Length: 361
Ligand code: KG4
Ligand code: ZN
Image 1: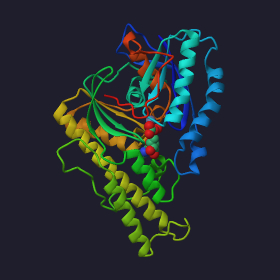
Image 2: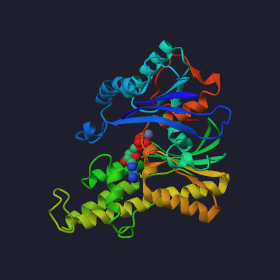
Image 3: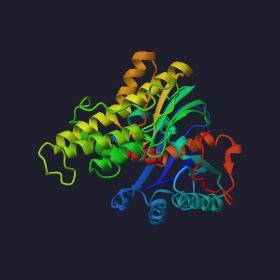
Image 4: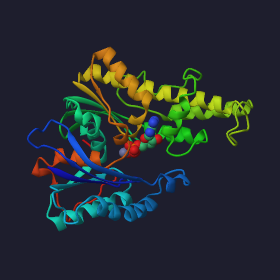
């Protein structure tokens, strides 16, 4: 079964063709092509994504992209999967309207996919190296740590399409905290990659930043206290003349202090994410752990989650390939493949509407 995936929920325009075998439902899904066009440079100057600008950029990009990758009559495509939410309404609308039009014209089933579900299904993608090796996909129940720019959640996945949220952030998402702290440090947007790169040269024990809600017996997260603590630390350093973020060359040691802050901040985030996930593993006894979302690209988080889960519970941890951690359409098409196995999941191509707050449970 071949699925066309379309993703326009935020600042990446993406399409992908994937194919899966409906008779061996629990094997992975192969990627035939996956194209992502990032608008980061456009939004960088605003310090964040501007919804209307994002929508216009999606419109400019999506038709040339489809023309380049997909047969114009839809030949060989069995279904179309599109992100219907959560995300920015004007941006989502571009992908959804294009998908509806194609489904209607080609007489193909249309499947609405939740963006977060897509991130989780990035762990079912077979591509490159892992498509040649033995096929191993996460087994259920899977405990999913979903950490992106808009969400930080612990989700128990009991079967395909069956999700239960067991914890979530009470304020900022993990990726959002990375982005905000990066801004304070004078780094660009998005902040995650910039902070993790800087952290490589820093001492993660230099600053003891707070671990939000770690002492609470629940599975929720909070990153706003950590963010404020970084801000106060920076102010204190500036007052003491030890740091000047207005100009990179102002002090020779600014970069070292910046790196120490980046490393200590990242350590606090990773520590709290890994320890809460382990606590959830102890209670819910999953068969596998799945890491998903843009923050899954963080090397420190990937490595620490894998080693801790192995050491404490001998549990396998699945992490998406780097290129499928950030927003892409292959993950949407793969989620669509599993949804498309049941006709009850087909959406009406004339009436499907976006839902910026679409929930996964
Ligand atoms: O999943 P995603 O591409 O978009 C959303 O659905 O939100 O996630 C983007 C987020 C951004 O906040 C970005 O800073 C973060 O993922 N991110 C990272 C890294 N790469 C991207 N955070 C930490 N470390 C990284 N290496
Ligand atoms: Zn995302």
